[in-house]
Amino acid sequence: MSSPLRRVAAEADERRIVLVTGGAGAIGAAVCTALAEQGRQVVAADLDAARAAAIAEPLGGVGVAMDVADPDSVTRALAEARERIGAMTLLVSCAGWDEMRPFITTDEAFQARVLEINLAGPMRVARGVLPDMIAAGFGRIVLVASDAGRVGSSGEAIYAAAKGGVIALAKSLAREVVRHGITANSVCPGPTDTPLFRGLAAASRDGDRLTQALERAIPMRRLGRPQDVAPAVAFLCSDEAGYVTGQTLSVSGGLTMA
Ligand SMILES: NC(=O)c1ccc[n+]([C@@H]2O[C@H](COP(=O)([O-])OP(=O)(O)OC[C@H]3O[C@@H](n4cnc5c(N)ncnc54)[C@H](O)[C@@H]3O)[C@@H](O)[C@H]2O)c1
Image (cartoon, rainbow, N blue to C red):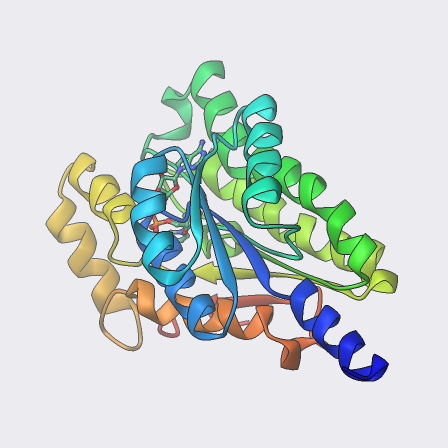
């Protein structure tokens, strides 16, 4: 192989592996599939390692156990993924969790849990993979935030604050790492029909009414689906999105418009 061709092959290799945290979840699994279709090799990282493996392995990837709220777990999972598959130059941060609670009833323990999973988690995962991106001179960071972080959400004050922080994190990373060929953006799903959403609706006083009210408020008159969100994430991971950074993209059927 001539040397320019070898360089192209090496570059292609460095752009191959994507870490998807929360890869066993509904949106995470759809993202894994969309990225595999884009030719990426997927590392699905999740609290539920068995389900992460069940999603990633048929796509030619791997599943690893990771608790984004635990720094040691993140370090161990990244080391395992590097050993099994290689350096990760693309990151989709999709792990998330919430419970509907009026802010006045929340306490320090709940607050710490929501912030650890939804805000500190993406920070430590991004910090963990950035050295490989910088070494490669290429990277894509897509943080799955939420429209709650843009416009607020009753009963989700701490989660919304965490997701607002995620949006700001993506913008600040975009500025800091642009010189290394790395982009950072956030994707904000609106209400999306997943186990997380169904759990939140079921725990609220009248979940069916909440769902129907949301469906009426969404200009497209339906909840989102994981398959609506995944293509937006895949675009921001693509080579073609190399001139797009620091952006916040809502995928919410028009519920929020910026
Ligand atoms: N469903 C919605 O309406 C909606 C709206 C806006 C944003 N989001 C965001 O989209 C993302 C995906 O959510 P989803 O709706 O697919 O929910 P989901 O519950 O199907 O998926 C979330 C995944 O994150 C994993 N996870 C939770 N805590 C973790 C931790 N500490 N470490 C590692 N993994 C952890 C879960 O095991 C699960 O697989 C989340 O970040 C969520 O906040 C969802």
